[in-house]
Length: 99
Image (cartoon, rainbow, N blue to C red; front, side, top):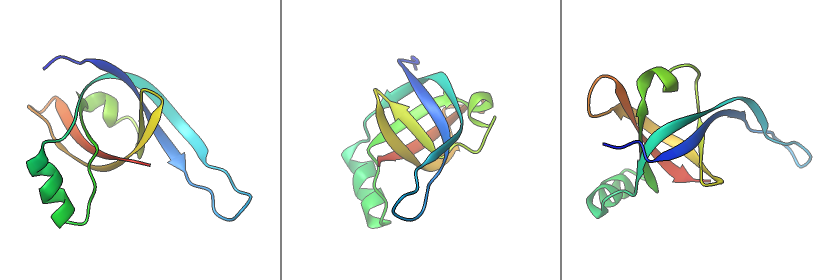
């Protein structure tokens, strides 16, 4: 697995009401392996009422530095839907959806 893109992990508190804005609490740019999900995964997650647009693998110690809830890939913001074990104990696998 080759870490092929730089991504930005962020902790964002969403604002409420008509005049509020989102607040970025913390962010960190890291290297990650970014890939689109397979059709099988898309169907499985759709059956669970979840949308997955990308799969991200990155170093566990970088991800665990904060409670990240968003990730920016090529200036597009994705919400982190779930995190699980990666290819080994040193990596974490994120399922993310656009928005």
